[in-house]
Length: 97
Image 1 (tube, one colour):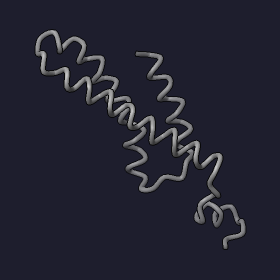
Image 2: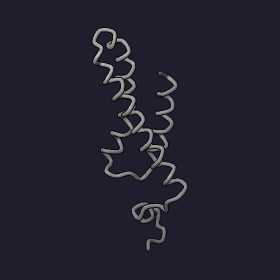
Image 3: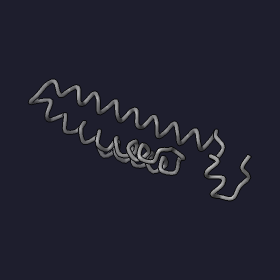
């Protein structure tokens, strides 16, 4: 539980520096894995009482995977392959085509 949380903290911190709009969606993508971790861990105990709750555990894992993919792919793409967005270049005083 702590290892996965730490991984999401590191990837989320890198993702905060990515250019991703709208900002509310960026915040949701960063916060969702932590909510999914709480659901995942709590589902271990709830499944013993109510077996269909296993679907919540599957959904939480899918949410963690989807958020990790969005954060990691966006960060790596912007870091290695894309040029800075026009809004960032204007803010830094660079040449805008």
